[in-house]
Length: 122
Ligand code: 5GP
Image (cartoon, rainbow, N blue to C red; front, side, top):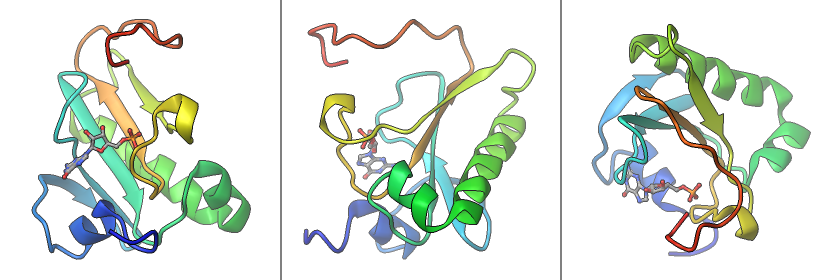
């Protein structure tokens, strides 16, 4: 896969299947294939930026739409009563693996603390 195209562009183009939960003109939300919580949805802008910092610098309106879509997903998935987490992994130390900016929306159960590498994959 070239640097110019990531897996998520292929999901956005419907070239590979995903369990889509919500869509706007400029964003797409779909379930993570390897969920880290009872509910784990990814929100991506359809236009590709490498990470959240690049998105924020280039198109703050689109970043706002990504966050608004994450909030909508939380509402649709019934997460707003007990709360949820929104995460943008950014580059190597955060373990970013797909270089098309995405928000992880996690919830549906009590989440653990996070931060330091546990030595067990996260
Ligand atoms: P990152 O580690 O870059 O923050 O997150 C990438 C996420 O994409 C991971 O949580 C991973 O499970 C998810 N992922 C990787 N491949 C696929 C796929 O083919 N389909 C879906 N729905 N999620 C994927």
